[in-house]
Image (cartoon, rainbow, N blue to C red; front, side, top):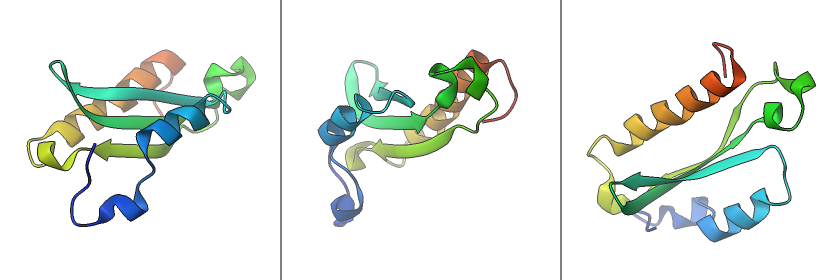
Length: 96
């Protein structure tokens, strides 16, 4: 994944984020694809997947990246909305 205009200094490397997630049970992460092509990465903090007692805790966006070559085509908006919808449905609530 590549960033635009030197934004890479503000974005964690996806491999680092995935490794980090294995040490944080509250991390929920997914690759973002356009068909079979990987175009981005999303990682959320969601304590509800660790304990039912934490189901009311807010879901927090930790990482979100769309490769610069795929920006401007609506992928970011579409996949961000999908990520939130998936988490809301899983939690059985209407808030994140």
